[in-house]
Length: 109
Image 1: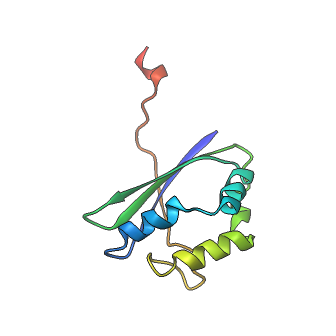
Image 2 (image 1 turned 30 degrees about the horizontal axis):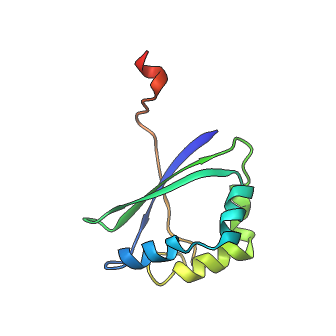
């Protein structure tokens, strides 16, 4: 398993709408993410900057690079494009974040 993190930017005033849409995430999108190897996905919001901080866990042999070619992924991006910063093809701008510290239960022994 591998954990990655990245940052996205929400348009000002769109937090409630972002949360509403994610509370109703499409089952076919959940299936696509799971089939691509995503096992856990969390998104946090920084109200001071409108930045979204995402962290996900994926299998070692994930196929996340194939997600942009799936219709359901493209439709989700189109659906979200009006409330966040995106590229012209509606893919959310994503800034990868580099790990600098990790504490786990094994470190406490």
